[in-house]
Length: 167
Image 1 (tube, rainbow, N blue to C red):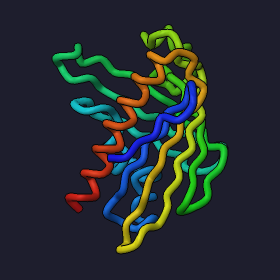
Image 2 (image 1 turned 90 degrees about the horizontal axis):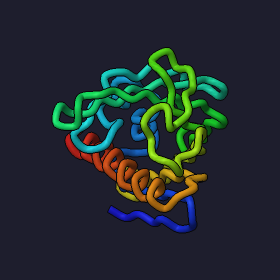
Image 3 (image 1 turned 60 degrees about the vertical axis):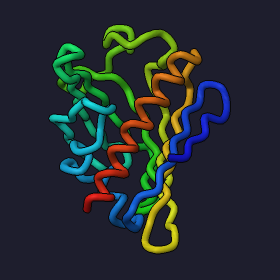
């Protein structure tokens, strides 16, 4: 459960996955896999519309559990670079159900979260057919927003790690 939050405004989360990079890659490119891990603990992902190519977008919907009101929130990932199976570079934005960007405040997000959050996902092969997955997010403007995003990303990556542990 290693993680390193080096630098102001930056989130870095690393997990080791029990699958080679070619298989772990599918967690980011296959809609069925994304729906299994996207969202913090207790949240579900009922929708993942994936256009996995440079310039393409993925629209993911995160649904809160009933005890948190059951609301839904949408994110749009726009891909800037894809180097299979080692690196994915995308920008995440809050969106409406049609995939159109919305300002974080309009989505009920606290101050400090920028309209566009750059993400880099690195997949590094490890001995024994395993993969180290590192997700780096940048541009948070408050420590509270950075910490909240750190916690959410850690929980997502825990779910991804468990997905492959049971495979």
